[in-house]
Image (cartoon, rainbow, N blue to C red):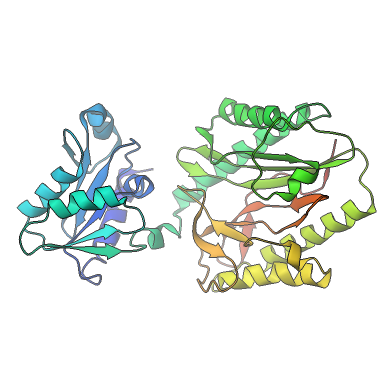
Length: 360
């Protein structure tokens, strides 16, 4: 990402501070620090105000910060918040915004301790996340690379999927192939769930082995150059019967209907509704127990959320997942998920992997 993009991001956020009635913003969340500065270290804070910004980190990252960011850097010893508050006091900031959903209470106490007479802390929500919803061309290209790496890893790893292999071993192979292909690692804990365990939407892979005549659910995503991808695919070990084929077709139709509803201006709840209408027609809507999707980027779960009652209008440049599923206790679950970018006229599916039920 070019340094000018980080500078422009800081300028856009800084321009909103007056409307939020704060003099400056303290940025604590690592993804937001990275978004504003390009800094990838594990210990960083940003103090942002209309005419400038400071990145705070510790001596371990002095060289790295100089290499990664065009932002002014302040190296602090010990915890960072006292240095942040000292800089704010020196500039006579009175109303200091902070990320209320991203701050531990212990850190909040440190901020309070550093307040000067007459200064106050102002809780803010979504100050940076709202801007992060719409991705730049550069960000979309990074997500596309992550998607392609993830799909290639799936193709390679599934050659090892056979009866007798454990969920845990297959998950490890998926993660290994991601790294071989250039990913920093998985974007989240890879899900491999066989047979009845596929009815657990967020199953953790364990020693359960794959067996004949069972469903196999894979949910995986790569993190590459900081950006996440997300994909779910289904396989069947053996020859699927009529029930499996009927249920798979219903979920696929629901997913395709939801993708067809994606366009600028559509409310996020409308995408969810499109999937649910298809499943309701097959009397499967009660087996669909989660939202239809979510945004992704520097984090695997970002705004907007595609669920009931979610009014956020989609906009060109948003990148979302579309992932309806059904889960039947004792039988198994089926989920199909793609990473999708909202385009000027509708949407484009970034995921290249076939959505056909994979027969093993």
